[in-house]
Image (tube, rainbow, N blue to C red; front, side, top):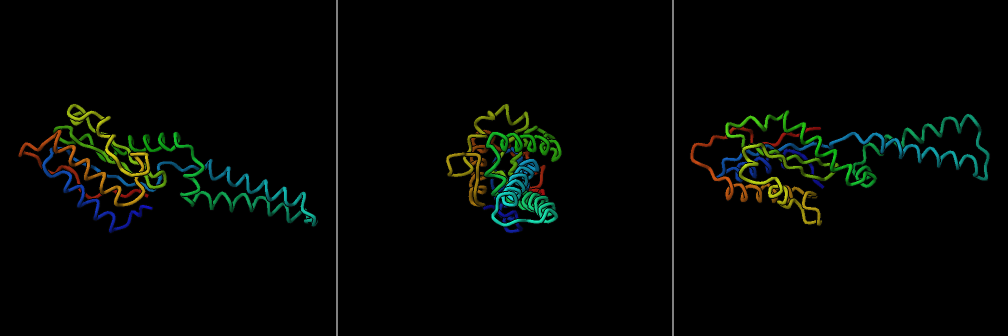
Length: 207
C-alpha cells in the first residue's frame, strides 16, 4: 500500500531529480487519492445492506416493531454506504478494471492541463499521474516528447510486478518506475547542455 506522506514525497522528489539528469525531458508527478468519487458503488453497497436488513426483519423468527424497521433499514443503508465510500480496498474490488482505467485517464488529462505540463519551451513535459485508490499510473507526454519517444514506449515502462505494468503497489514500485523512465529518456532525449529545470521536482499531492 502506498502512503502519500512526507517521506514518500521526498523520495519521489529525489527520484525525479535523478531521472531528469542527462535528459531534456521534464517530469511532473501528481499523486491523487482517487480519480473518481465512486459514489454509485458505495450506494450499491448501502442498498445491499438495506435489503439484507429488511430480509432479516421480515423472515427472522422474532417480531420486530414497525418503527424499529423503519429506522434500522435506512440506517443500515447509510452506514454501509458511508463505510464503503471510505474503504479504498472495497471500492477497488467492486469497480471493474475498465472503469478504473477510464477514470484515471480522464483525471490525468485534466491534470496535464492544470499542471501546465505543456508549458515547457521545447514541449518535452511528461506527466506521471498516480492514483492511489485505483493503484494505477497514467503517462501523458507533451507533443515535443512524443516526437522523440512514442507514447507506447513510455507506457511500456513497468510500474509493478503484478502482471499489470501500470499498477504499482508500493512506494518502491513508484520509485523504480521513475528511475526506468529516466533511463529511457536519457537514451531517447539526451540533454543538450542548455536545459533548465522548468517544473518542480516534488510531486503534487491531491486529496
